[in-house]
Length: 133
Image (tube, rainbow, N blue to C red; front, side, top):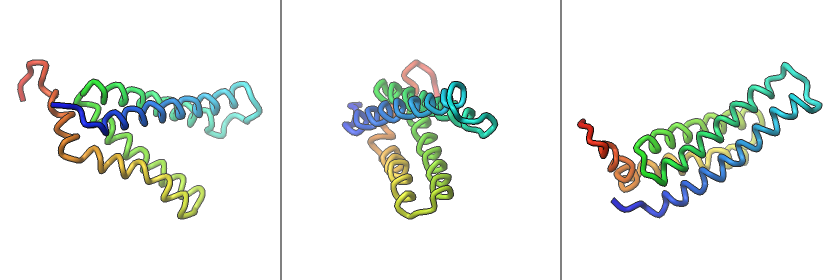
């Protein structure tokens, strides 16, 4: 099955997002470790969670380009994680504009991953290693 063009866009967005997440996480962890932020506020732990999220985005980008069947599941998880983060942002900031911005990409991602051609693309290599259902 041929790769839908949107998978290239998705992989690029995931790789870019992963880079941003890793850099943000490194900024938080090093600000606590070497900088002026006090310990015990949770910033260091959240920094590592953000770094791990960035690494998951990089893994999803590579898996999407190589048509790994688990890329679809990881993409769904990342979209749901994005909706959770959006809810936290909305609770923290409390404005409609932030809600719309924060939920936009995860909702588009959920819609795109559940389109029939995209699901078929990721499921086409599900049993290509000779396994049986």
